[in-house]
Image 1 (spheres, rainbow, N blue to C red):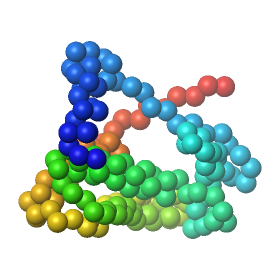
Image 2 (image 1 turned 180 degrees about the horizontal axis):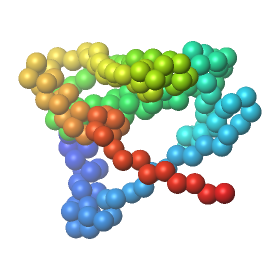
Image 3 (image 1 turned 180 degrees about the vertical axis):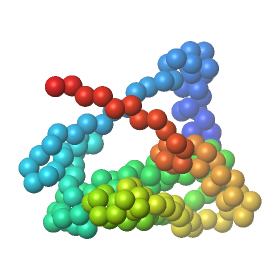
Length: 167
């Protein structure tokens, strides 16, 4: 896709949001239903994914780990954003791989150590690019990808999560 293609697709959407800022605020939703064997079935919109315990916490490895799913969401969002930004600024990506990895200390989630954090201690995002773009163009591409990647920005900022329940 070329920059003029992405611009023609996004121009009316951007104008709509300029004219009516409230129309740009959309609530995304994911839900899951608890299943057997300490699992949770999540409807991804295209299929149902069954998440369970990671083998490091007692899972048998047949279900998806939600930590893996978080990293997959980051890699997917960064990849889509990278591809879109490349088209928008006319950087020819011949190929690209986005790798997201994170370090967990499972002592935290298992309550073995109060000093061990619950959650990722560090997340790393790496791009393997095949392109003839200059170093300056690559720097701009990655800077804009970071800026516009929803999942990256969400994870990189402290966010309030409101919790409620119903019975």
